[in-house]
Every structure is written in C-alpha cells, then in structure tokens.
Length: 396
Image (cartoon, rainbow, N blue to C red; front, top):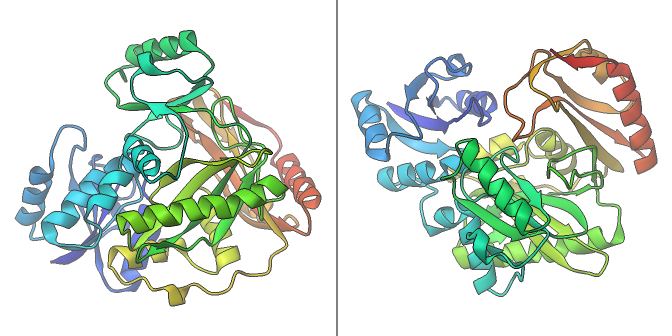
C-alpha cells in the first residue's frame, strides 16, 4: 500500500493537519509513534508503533514490510526524529536523505559547519571543563523540543550545578552543547529552502523573550521594529543562505532563530528544520499567503516549487502571545476560543482547558492568540484586552 509516513513523538508533530493535507490529495497516511493509544490514531489511516528510544530502523522497516506499507514520503516536524527521517528516506530512496539532514540533526554539527564556513564566531563546546565563556546557554544537541532542558548559566559553579541537576533527573547521558550567550534581542526567520537557497517569508521580533529560561514569552511582532533587529534579519538570512548552499539543501522548511545587538553583531541561535510552532503557521499564512503544513507535505513528496510563494501581504503589524503555566498540575481556564476571537483584531486563539503540566523543564503553553493592529502600541493594547477577557485561570 502506497502511503506517506507521519512521524510523531510525545503526541507532537502536527499530525492532524498533515493527515488532512494527505487526505485532500487522496494519499493514505500512516502514523508512526511510540504511543499505542496516541490521541492522533483516528486522524490517520493506519498506525505503526515503534519505541524511538530502544528500537532501531531495521525493526521499523520490518514492521512496515510485514504490514505491506510502501512509503512514498516521510513527514517529520520533530528534531529528535531527524535521524529516523533520514534513515527511512535513504532506505526507501525518498526525498530528504543526505548529509544535510544529518548535520541539521545535531546543533553541534551545525555550529561546526558554520564555523568552518567562516559564518559564525560564537563560542561553543560539549565538555563543561573546556568552557571559557560566560554567560553560556546549555541545551540538548539532538533531543531538542519546546526549549526542553535549556538553561542559562552565568559561571563555572552554575554550569557544574546544572550538570548535577541533569544527572539527578536522569538526563546525564543526554548529548548537550554549551554555547556562548548572545546579548541583544532575539528574532526569528521562517521560509522554504529550494535548490540550496533560503527564501524567508516571515521575520519576527521577540521583545519580551524570557532570557532566564529561554522560553518564548510575551508579545512577538512582525515586522521587526527595532533598527538593529531589522538590520540583523538580512545578515542572518545571508548566513543561512550560504549554509544551505554549502549543504545543497532542498525541499525543506527552516525556522531560524538569531540575536542582534545594538553594536551590529548578529549571530545564529539555532536552526530548526520545520516551521515555528504555536501561532507561527497562522502568521505565515497572514503574511506570506502560504500554508506551511501544505508546504511541508509538498516538500516531503519532492513537489514544492517557488511559484507557490506570492508577494508578502500588506499587513501593518501582526503579533501573538503564548501564555505558559509555571507549576505542575492541570490548568483550569474559563475562556473559550470563540469569546477571544470575537475581540477586536484577534485572528486566531487556542485555549487548552485541562492542559496538564508534567515537566517544568520545557515550555507549557495552554493559551495562544494572534492578532493584528496598525501599530505595536495598539497591538499591545489589544493583547491586554484579550488577557483581561481571559480572566482568572489556575493550576490544580
């Protein structure tokens, strides 16, 4: 049976919209996940269970062969599953295999490649004993998602203490990278890569970014407002364009995060081979006129072309806010998506009443909303109105 595989871990991976896109094309979807009773099972035509942590690629291939499943493509929006995506693509001769995907699967390899190309001067290493730059950011090199296990450390004692914390939590064997902390303002750029060229469609400034936990927080804004951030966007874009050309990347979507300071230094924070999460797809559609999930499915099939990119739409300002719970338990919230979408300027809202916070080492967003306005001040005022309308919420 000709099918497209959708990879999922932790119930994540944009399974439902990807399956919907495949269904609209008349293509079967097969969900590959580690959870036998995953909540996304009914969204796909078939489901194959694999333990991502203890099993290997031959075991999954054997399982697919036993079921008569012949993959046409692999859809994957999770960095930890990039080695599986590349392995499946190589085994079945599908789009997506190659050294480029192998490099993107490791933040350490990305840093090494950028350094070798002369594109970045940021300090980094894997051995805590060799760190001679502080402040520093510690994060997983491969098992990365939702800012999980990311921590800023301001000196050797904090770095050693965090290493002990990881060991106590059972993450002592996780491959980590330690990077120089970059001052300035964080921003991101999203867009497709076709034939080695990066084509940005959305640039976002993060003026309220949480620089302690390194979680997205507060308002995010397109287009960037501060001069040094606006100047940093083409610098970062040029860096990524050269990186893509060197690796001959093709048929990929990249969500790239960077930082720019007032002294004119722009540096890469990280590259994610997917679109940004949360309200990023909504903003990409509003500004770029393109559905990034549809684009990802087209890329998996090797069909994406640049003629799908139209001129950027003339929107004054678009922004969005994610609200995060900061204690363990179940979130109770009375607001509804319908209530929030009725407010001035609101484009989309997502409310997850009953969201369960089980781990504070990652982002835990239970409320998101995107909105438009004629200025950043009006955007902030409208965001405040939304939060006021949300009212009380609690974790029980």
